[in-house]
Image (cartoon, rainbow, N blue to C red; front, side, top):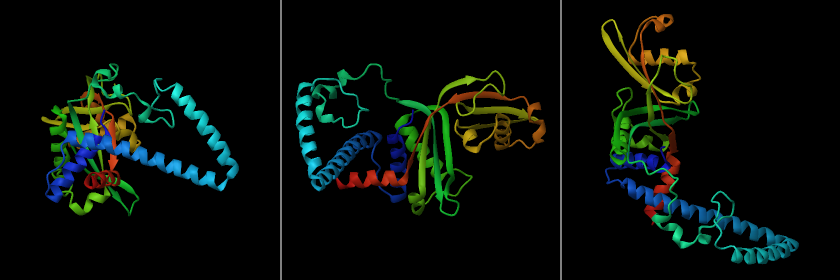
Length: 282
């Protein structure tokens, strides 16, 4: 599925184009994000420790309890340093993990291999202070499998600057943006126009009406975000394709329906900017 790094790379690509600079590569983004995440975790841990120290100084009785607990924990940690740690357990520190865990040969074989190519869509939304919510600013993608780095960089720019439904995104709009990346999987021919699930499947339809061929797609999250039923989704999708027939007669048009899946990841500009400032400071 899509990742934070994929979204950051889209922001990086667009920002670099608008600011006339060379963007970081996807591998550079992935490496720096990992370092940034570790640094942020360490900072948060230090802040928590500082707060505990301040509280202990205010409460002498608590200080004695804390010192006793600390001594007990140190002894326990020393006797269990080789135990496998659960990364979801609060207080787990990477310093307790044996150095061999960083070796690629020790990677969990149960984890899926990194995604190297995929059909994908890049969506840009802009926050409206007037309405207090995000609205669409561009969304373009491809059903042809793309090398991830090339596909993300290409469609980050295309959807931001070349979606003909909107004017191109400008530099001043960057702070209002969020980006969503969706990697598409599990393409299947539906048995009929209702052979799909709301919230699970995206749809790609095609049909012929009055001798003309039409086609359009909605990503998996569109119908649920709009609160549509299956019928409303199909009618809206036919309208998107350009169909102008009577709404109540939509099911008289033979539809070819392909369903697919895809989990999107979304990142707001504020998160991108915080990471990018950290990169610049290194």
